[in-house]
Length: 286
Image (cartoon, rainbow, N blue to C red; front, side):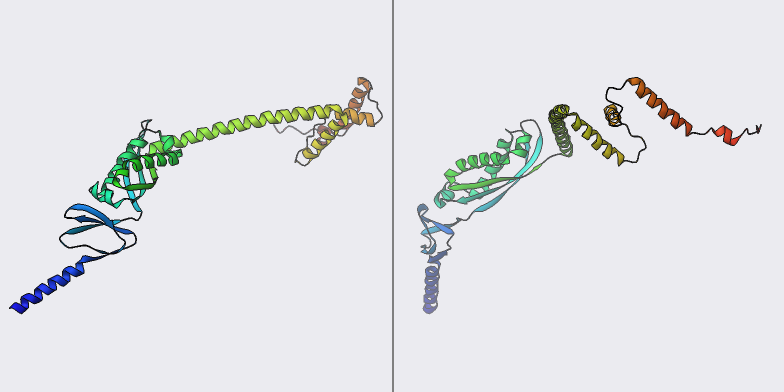
């Protein structure tokens, strides 16, 4: 009987000795309490914890990714949206993270949700959609200052989604379309203004030499001749130049021009044949 009792005591002592040794990884720290009072922070590596006298709380120092649930937010311009975000933080002081707050993970999560609603409620919808970087910095600064007493460092905050109602999406689409139309009209007006300046410069240049204007007429006729049309309009100035080239003279009287035109009309009229003479008198079918 005594031998069994001795063996039991030896086994208990061996198990207690084995439980005294703890191994902490490189990213872990152990907060040691001696009879309920904080003693020190140990780790990483092999540490010794005296059973029943000392207690250890493990703390992870790696960056923790916290997904903030979707929050119903009313913006400054009274638009209801749903916003969710992601939060990156890590424990910088294991002592404060264990002693000053019961559960630093849950506390940081709740604080992130309330801060997200309060900060976004002070801004308009356009700021949420266009100025996310500034909003992320504002939320990060607020969270970092409030979690500093817990030994938590908030390294980054990112707004992931801003969900809108279908009606609001249509309103934004119409607004964007109106903005694009306004820009198109402005660009068109600026183009017309610039074109008018260029046309004025071209007119001044062509007015200096009459030959330049005639060359422009001929170029226009070349472009018109490529179209499938039987009507070509000759400018009056070009006809005068042609008459000048035929030796009629630039200062010929208008009667000569009228006579020439009359002759042309007579020649053209001779080319037509009276269809009644060719067909003869047809008897009435009535």
